[in-house]
Length: 318
Image (spheres, helix red, strand yellow):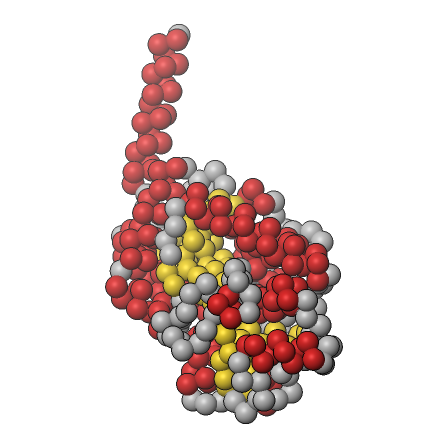
């Protein structure tokens, strides 16, 4: 009987190993938690095409926007852990648990696969603003407490929290003006209805180049190759300051290791390709391609950072 059981177990293990080795045998769905046309969607589509070619199958992008990304994430968290449903998410993943009273999925329901990219924000003002640099912005905020205002695309965005992090670091008294998305916020900064905002390099650098906006500083630890003349916040007014928008890939918890490993290996290879790196760099984004352990550590750090900022600022959903 023992020999029979051992034989059955060995046969099951062999069959499972064979099935995993054959992965993928059908198309993979890459769920993007945000709407078509946004930055996360655009980068996900670059990745999806090459990932499919690497794996020898189609990788189909499935946009499931809503509730600050929790709808898409919740869908993947409840999907079969077989590697055929994969999540492409972004910074709100680290922010949402501290703003929503209840999340639609458990934190352990998703397994980090790789950090895909990092993107800094730039501090922008209208082109003819009397604020000439980031020190001037801080000086104005200190000279006129409660009068300087800043825009964002909503309370759960990095734009909002990056400004709040700066406000808390320097003890400034500034007023937040929330919008439904970043586009209208940028328009009102250009029009002078709002004093400044943090915005992505992709959204704002063309307007800076055309003379419609002025860039005061960037939120990354080092200057951006795309905007080398723009100083960092860390080098000018707040040593150690950094705030990024990130994109990353997750799989449902319990995904077999051989399947997750195959997905990870292909993804990292894609992010090392010259054409992919160029596509990312063109929009001010740094490709990463971390290990799962590195991504998990990064998420832990991001979670702690934004939890503290939200708590100290008493920030609520709009």
